[in-house]
Length: 37
Image (cartoon, rainbow, N blue to C red; front, side, top):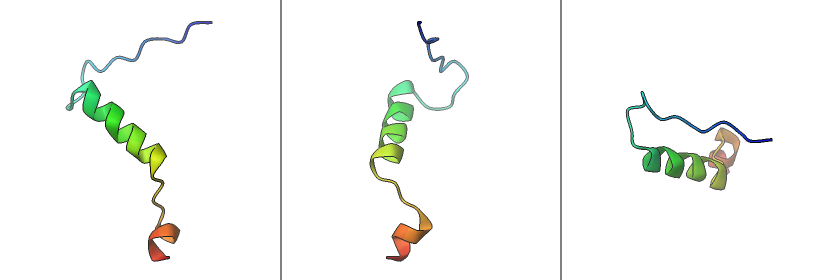
C-alpha cells in the first residue's frame, strides 16, 4: 500500500523548514510539565 505524496503547495514556508520543525517537535518534546522541572 502506497501512502499519498505530501503536498506543500499553499504553505508559507519551504518544505525543508517544515520538515525540520516537525523533526524538532518529535525529537525534543516540550510540555509545560517538563519546562517546570
